[in-house]
Length: 107
Image (cartoon, rainbow, N blue to C red; front, side, top):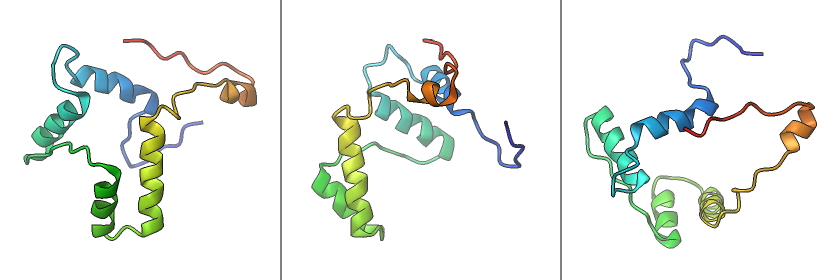
């Protein structure tokens, strides 16, 4: 069931389509660099992606007022993603709902 909202949004299943449309697959630039460039164009100021080592990232997070425990949790989550810990696709949603998930197009 969809709820009507005054807040415009994009269905999460369409975010990949949007990203694929915005990014140039033939570019020698990383996808993070391309996203930073697109965001820079949108907001009218330079945005850069900086891949910080965990220690520097924690200091940067703490400097914004994020609590120590939260900074550690964000760094752990980043490590999980970087190491592929969230890459496994299971059938749990289908099992719980009793139906197949919607197909996600390849392109």
